[in-house]
Amino acid sequence: MIGYVTLGTNDLQRGAEFYDQLLAELGAKRFMEEDSFIAWAITPTQPSLAITKPFDGNAATVGNGVMVALAVETPAQVDALYAKAIALGAKDEGAAGPRQGSFYAGYFRDLDGNKLNVFCITKN
Image (cartoon, one colour):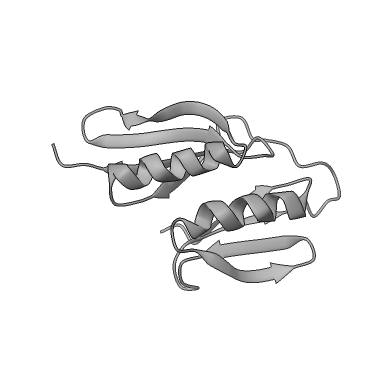
């Protein structure tokens, strides 16, 4: 049901370098780009993630309680993507590992402080 998620950034180039490398781990590439906006997707018809400088010209800020979840297929992919994010300078918000029941996830904040997680549903 989600078409895309947009995150604010104060440094588009720095954010682009982070997400180029991080989302490449999922097979996503840039598919839409303007002077103040970049979007990535695996295919243009699937949900995408974008970063943008705020339209109103004010500084981008992090929404309290807002989080973007990136779905993958296996715990190994969760581990790899979480580790990649940390290696790229993301801040740890909860190491990759099992949570409740069949939920396996890792949490981090990107270079602008936006909270993301990568998760999969495992078979018990």
